[in-house]
Length: 193
Image 1 (spheres, helix red, strand yellow):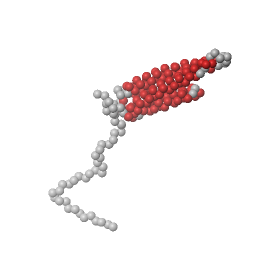
Image 2 (cartoon, rainbow, N blue to C red):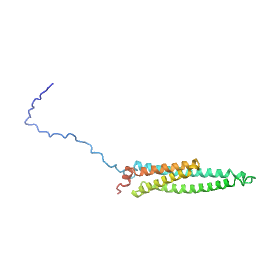
Image 3 (cartoon, helix red, strand yellow):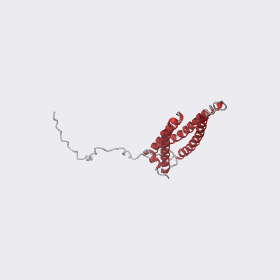
Image 4 (cartoon, helix red, strand yellow):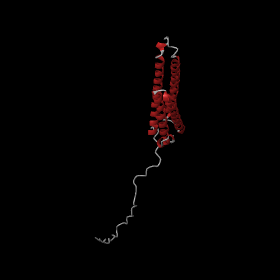
């Protein structure tokens, strides 16, 4: 079917309308960089980083305390046999249990220092700059490394040590990931007035 256009006569009093472009956006294009959060509002990745820091420190303290209690229970299990006729035969196990308590106490002190650093980093996140973000990434990498080393060493130590190593590994990797996200980078590089 063929249709013909009829010529339209332009009225002498009508104005000529300029042609419209094919695309005239009414909204400016989206920025390629994520926008920095306003002052006083944490970026989502920074907020999540703070949560991971606090939870990892609390969980590390709880697991170190559980490890200490487990070692003390093992040591105390030999107490009734201290004066038994076979006490000489179990003296090696008693010494090993006492050494386990000492190592567990050292692990609890280490977890307390680790928790203090994590809570300090978490408290400073809202005012921090790029160096604090770098400190969080280094702290996360350090935690992940300790988790890997802990898994290699504690495979035969028992359940609590393995869970603590896995917690360190997961928290460290998550911290390093969250602190290097684009919205976290934009938050730490935001202008300050």
